[in-house]
Length: 261
Ligand code: PLP
Image: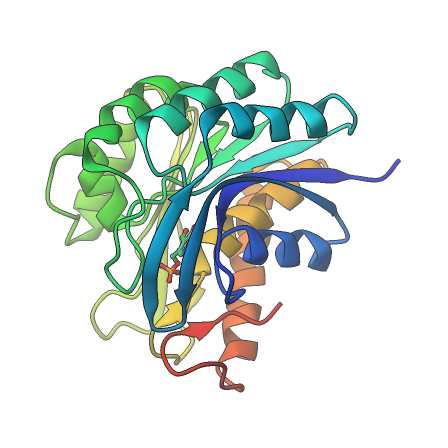
């Protein structure tokens, strides 16, 4: 049977992040991709120039059209924008509770543009965190979720990942990203019974674009294919490293560097 993954996220018309990155990632894994769009953005590699949210009823209509027809094996959730969107997405996920969910708590772009209203953080924590099989915040998002400064050490990362798990997430992959001048990028994976450090070589590329979307989609594709969580995360990290390496060899646009799938 064909493996299917669904992304519920925002659109990046320049193809580097959001729905477009998710669908490219699914395809690269041999997984059939479906998409429910929560918001249109007008953006390119230099920044976000506008956001046009999709009305909650029409988000629901898209999801019902997909989920009443396709057998979806995993759902990735990305940009949500505001409280009303979070509420409707939570209702959709609750109605399909047997499908594993990877939640990328998208809040702000690498270029500094806000993708989640600041008054929506509590709703995200209360409504979506408990529904996710895995959440994948970076250090900035983890800090914003906890109302704390971003972790500035590996010890602080582990403490914040455990704090997010204790708030109701089944598992947390807290992404350390590109810290200082170290040659590796270190993440911490906290599950119900363990915390583990995961390292990947740091690819020499300035301002990559779409890494968070791509990692969460790659993990969702792997879960859809039936991999266990830890293996899905390790494979997802390998996929992002390879996509970053490809991105470092090409030039697209005038700003940040979209990953190449
Ligand atoms: N645009 C959309 C629609 C996104 O969902 C995201 C991130 O998840 C971004 C932009 C940000 O991408 P980046 O911070 O990698 O540039």
